[in-house]
Amino acid sequence: MEPEIEDLANFLNKMGAKIEGAGTNQIKIIGVNRLKDVGYKVMPDRIETGTYLCMAAVTNSKIQLTNTNYEHITPIIEKLTEMRSKNRKRKKLYKNRC
Figure 1 (cartoon, rainbow, N blue to C red):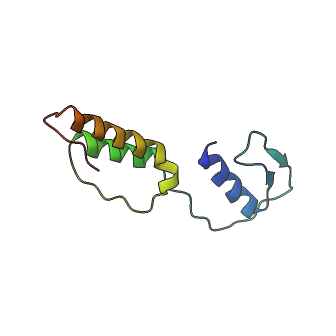
Figure 2: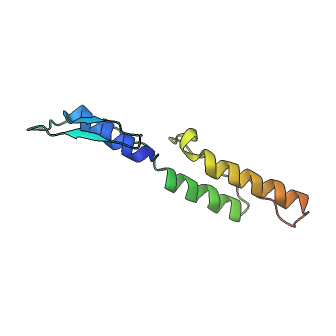
Figure 3: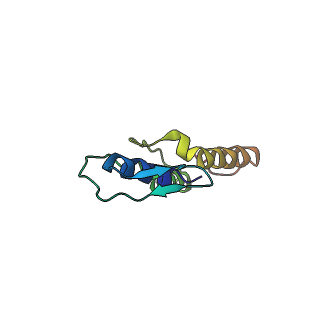
């Protein structure tokens, strides 16, 4: 499931919406008359994080990323790790590292 959908539902629920099932295959939305103003911290952008990780890998650079959620970028970390392993096994002239 898309974590952004769940985050959006959390935001709207905090505003007074009635949304159930975010993060599942079925979402139930019950209409409300009004939403209230709230403060909310939006989740980190996993696509942007993955892009920076790939850029570091391609340019053989080190990178430190903050304010990100490791659980949301696990698939890209696994693929980059797999690439690094394959590159080392093939004795390429470069190594990918993040």
